[in-house]
Image 1 (tube, rainbow, N blue to C red):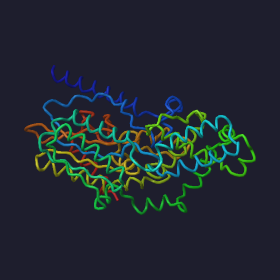
Image 2 (image 1 turned 180 degrees about the horizontal axis):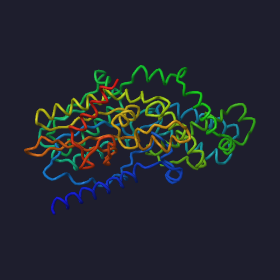
Image 3 (image 1 turned 180 degrees about the vertical axis):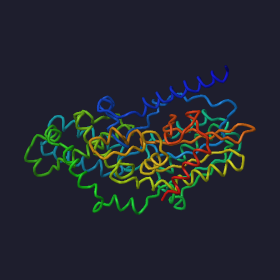
Image 4 (image 1 turned 45 degrees about the horizontal axis):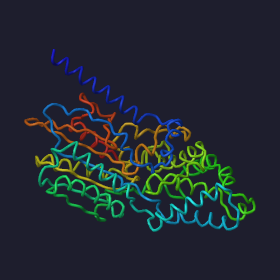
Length: 432
């Protein structure tokens, strides 16, 4: 009778888990994007901490002893100061020439306000990015306190890009605020770039501007989805000025990026009112297209981008086994970029992160960048053991929510037997 009840409980938990995953990671719709325009920001979508749900109970007798993590840096400013400045300069010049509409003048004033914060910060981690990393570390500590005991050894490594280093620092400092005795080794070195930020020659050649069979089809897709006339005419009152000084295509894209990144800044300004929702949705589809083809698993690339994450997966397996074989505990924290997290999520075969479709119109339904690599997006693999048992269990978290690995079968979802997980991933690494 007890076995039946346990089986029923396990089945019920599995159903609840699958329903949670379906609601969080289900097919993206236009209605979803229209309802939350920030999602059209693509990889500029701020970390969705408000979407974190409660985790399922740990199987009886098991305790966490190790956590493996790969995280994208937290929220940042646009990559270059010039991404703001050339638009600001254009609007300033048009304003002096009396060539702006009232909306154009308003947009100019708003961007001037934004520039006060953004100037000199191109590519930098924003204050929100620091708060995101601190929040992730805090929730990790509180969810798995058994790992973070006195003097436990933890490893934190980042790519050499400063926003990643500062993300690592914010994360590590928050852990030490909870337990100052934690022994966290922090490193940022070219030595670790060979797995933290690796790209195969095959992937680089595929993406090359003068190569890649995908580029002509993409060019036509982008052309048909970028319609700047309405936007430009709403900002500029002088048609002659537009002809002589405005590149409508470039301006629309620049304003799109500025609008999308405002959610990552402290200045409380929005530019979404300059766009129609359909325009934002169309532009986002173009960006999502590029990410899907160049960093994920679209049919166009034949799955080659997963090769970029193989050295990282090897490091994940080796680091885990080192702790397992020592019968110790600890954590390995890695900080990198969206271009690393996308292929990792695909190679790990996290649910809804490795679909492969060929029709560009269907890309966003199968794969959505903002769901996989928001700012501070992260994958966590948590390891559990039971006294007197060699059967180690693991579970996977994507942005701190439990997620399944469909190719690996389990009788205790969302938990998996490590021996099954390791065997599956080793088979992927051995498959050249």
